[in-house]
Length: 297
Image 1 (cartoon, rainbow, N blue to C red):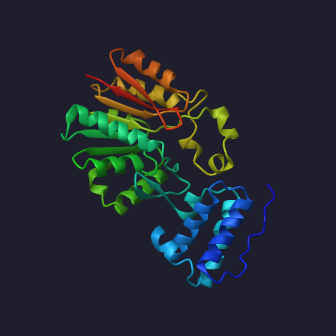
Image 2: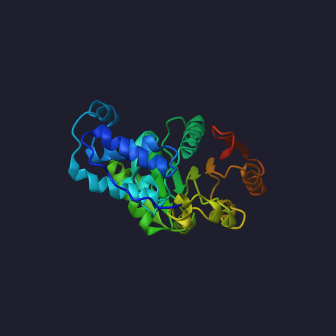
Image 3: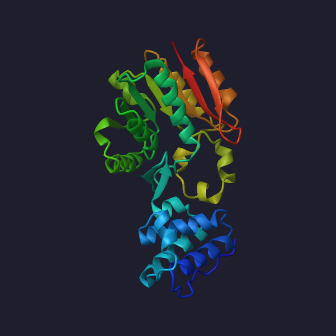
């Protein structure tokens, strides 16, 4: 892609700045150019969406132009807008993100909903222990803690930098005391501590190694490979977690996010050690495999 010089033609109003930003983003091939331009302008002005539309005729603060130009240039290089702005919306809440963590996707909200529904079917409003493995930004752990305040949540990640980002999000949402943060790999810290739990939830790396090079630049060049690479077939993290589960008294609910075609393979892995398990593959809105939900009696 040929880089284009980013410049603003001295916009006089918020509308003109918005139009120039959206036009530039469209020119460089951004699909959601109108929405991304709106997000940039709103962030610079510190306003919500309703206020943004009301003030389109207001004077554009010229001192904001350099920052807008810088953001548009970074977007042209392929950097995800979420990293540029430092945040992502997930489950109706705002989460801080940086290049140490995977950007939370809307599809992961399906995992949250499925785990909450399955768990409440079994225990209603009982106090239970939930473990989130590979917590990243903390979006899953924090959302579960906020949606189910009576749950005790433990969040584990092998990356100290990711844990720092997750804890920053927990402080923002005033939920840090409800979550235990552990640096470690998979379930190993809990095995060492002999700690039990009722629910395991995880969105592990599940992209086959050879596939990563073919991902969009904004994914392969900016998001952490540690959070993407699931090994040769993308199933290594599931193998590890399923093997480690044998060292615990069986958790009653397990929820995994999975790749678009991994439902059958992950289900078979689970049934090799949990032959009596009730395994359900749930699809996303596009009809792709997205969630594996396991119930044990």
